[in-house]
Amino acid sequence: MRKVPLFQYALDHGDSSSQVLSVVEAGPRPVLELVNVTKTYPTQPPMQALTGVNLRVDEGELLAIVGPSGSGKTTLLHLIGTLDRPTTGIVRITGLDVADMSDRQLAALRATRIGFIFQQFFLAEHATVLENVANGLLYAGVNASEREERAVDALSRVGLAMRTRARPTQLSGGERQRVAIARALVGRPAIILADEPTGNLDSSNGVTILALLNELHQEGATIIVITHDRDIAASLPRQVTMLDGRVSSDLSPDSLAPLESGAE
Ligand code: ADP
Ligand code: MG
Image 1 (spheres, rainbow, N blue to C red):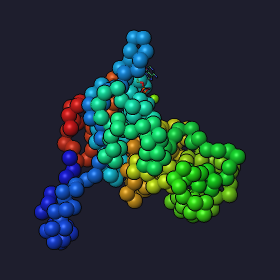
Image 2: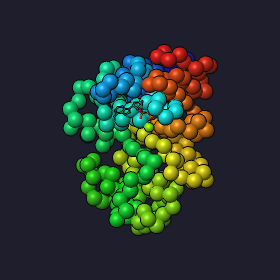
Image 3: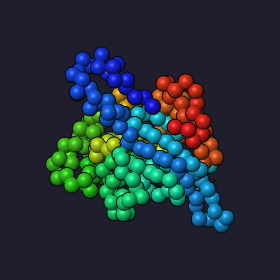
Image 4: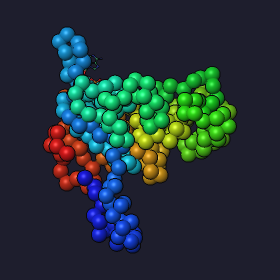
């Protein structure tokens, strides 16, 4: 999907054919691939929360995963975030198969390639805004001065450069979520995973946060927003709809019709 035709790329860029070939062979890079993923919780009786989910997300995409309560969104979030493993099927993050990795390796993958944004922000109240963001790099092997420098940079990107010394309790809900977004950005992750990012905000702050996510997308970030809100989903460039543990439709501007469940 969404492959750049060779001749079109050459026309647009006027590159020599050898350079063009190497670019085109690489194609859009998948940062996330789910292949025939199922998840069954070992309850009595067992609960199959996901059934044959196929999903590919390329670098630079902004999409919503939307669906009613019980459709499997949280389960999917846990698999994409490598917080849990599939029962069957393949989950690849930036080409790496999570099945091949130990828990320790997965923790490292999570710390370096995935930025999480949650509905409840999860900021440390006793710490400053700057510390909250800089601490996102504690396990990235970055020294203190670079942590601070990058935190200031991330806070500028979310429009909070002036509030570095404030504490989360002094901020509005929308500002707190922007701090959480800066913390997700600071590690330069391959994927930003946002779970109901506007769920605790009033509508005007919600609009601001969505605008910010759109802006980060324009700058090249890959962002997956999990939401039960159809209006939020409809405002994003691609909508993957979950129903009863399956992908029931996958809509983006360059798709003419919804994909059948399980189709690529
Ligand atoms: P959503 O986030 O869309 O509401 P979930 O992924 O939370 O959906 O749940 C999908 C289905 O799996 C639901 O029927 C839910 O009850 C069930 N489920 C979720 N987590 C567990 C669990 N830990 N153990 C057993 N069943 C679960
Ligand atoms: Mg849920």
